[in-house]
Length: 255
Image (cartoon, rainbow, N blue to C red; front, side, top):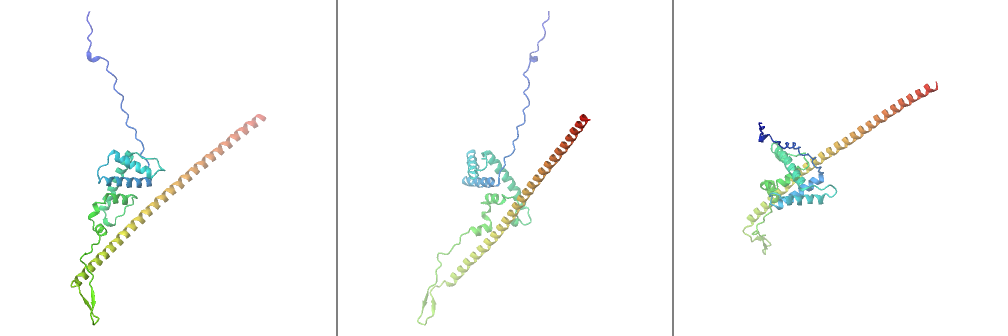
């Protein structure tokens, strides 16, 4: 009697694992305008305190706590949500910055993005330290400690005699000081004018966005009202048909 050949490889194998389901994608959190401003300020303070170094998990927790304390009326955001939002803001800022550099007039570029000025101020604080306007605005006025006011003495003939031999040199120094002050005033006026134009443009864009939201709200209300009118008219037609059908049945029974 022959024994059947048993293949050791033909033993029952465990069933293959079920295919892994793709990770569920959750919708990104909604950030309000005030929350975004609070996030930028909190991140900037923490980033500067670390001398623009890398933020660790504990640092992001501190940023999230600061945002939650500044915006108590909205749901708190986690440290991961804050980090992802900052990454998105920086990506958008780099895009807008590239547009400004490729513009025909880079010095007069204005972005319609509401957070551009705040992000540009945070990112460009040190990079703009060599900018001529920034140097003029931040440069303190230096006065010569050797500058002396010339003394006068009246002679018996009531003629003023100058005692200081460096009077002409002192006059030149005073003129230079006045020239620097005038240049500073002109630069400050230019910067103030440019800033006012940018703020006016941003305000106009915010008004446009608010008008667009208001028009969308009115459109949705009108669409809802239209749907309600259609449903009411269909309901009335159905009631009329039903009443007519019942009346016809009553007439047939009585006849």
